[in-house]
Length: 352
Image 1 (cartoon, rainbow, N blue to C red):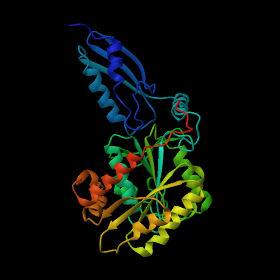
Image 2: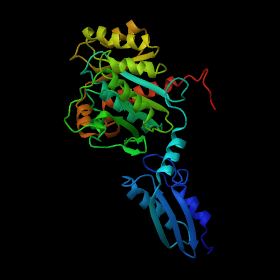
Image 3: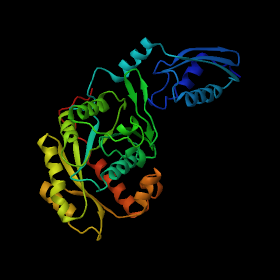
Image 4: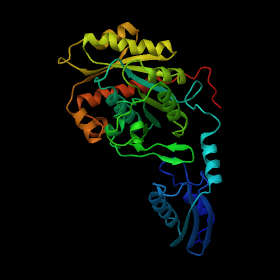
């Protein structure tokens, strides 16, 4: 049998990813040295921070990869931590020079989900759509911009998740393949958020610049209901965003939902469609069609009432994964298909 080489070990390590940054550890300069002596390999590994929450998984994956190299029977793993200068260099390289990575010119589709009032299931629709898109193999990020009524972490089953901070870069938790950030991950449980405009603006800006999502196909934003500070801020920061308007079937809800779409247009965003949630006879009829008529866009989905949807949200198990045959799940999956089918316009954007 041919003796193992350091190059073979490095090749194996290149298949190990940092589970938070989602890049190979060799690309992140985490592998400092590799030596092979007979059947024994020695690897120097440097984690990004002290107490890295992904340390155990990285160590396990490294051991599995190295001991899977033909001829390697033993591994000496030297674990350490990057110096502040090394960490800063990594952050700069990952983030690049762009301070607003999702603004005009981005190749990431930015989709804001809005509603005229609360209680229409906007957050559930956003979370389910994000999971459905991720299940199709897309790289998906989700910003819970509903600062006062944040609920996305619970719906996705990560109510206690905390982001990892590397220097001034924040790594978002991942749930069901979706990278997600929410103010709920930074405040104590049951603590109300009572902020005014300037602080809301700064928070949204930090979510979009200081959180490292990596290369995304789609970034979804769960906006708060109405036409307040957050909607205006995100309109200023992301005039390139597409907007989905969520409403209920009640005809009386149409005017309220329409206003959220009109605000989006005032700040330059593009309203692409309406989602009628809780569709059926209990909450009346015609609301989705009326909003779509007024905004001159199509109804992209009619999601019927289903006990499986709130049950999945309470359990942190999205219905599109747990019960895809459910009628509501089928409508949500159809919404994902409609979003994918729209594609993204690249006219005027640099592909380099």
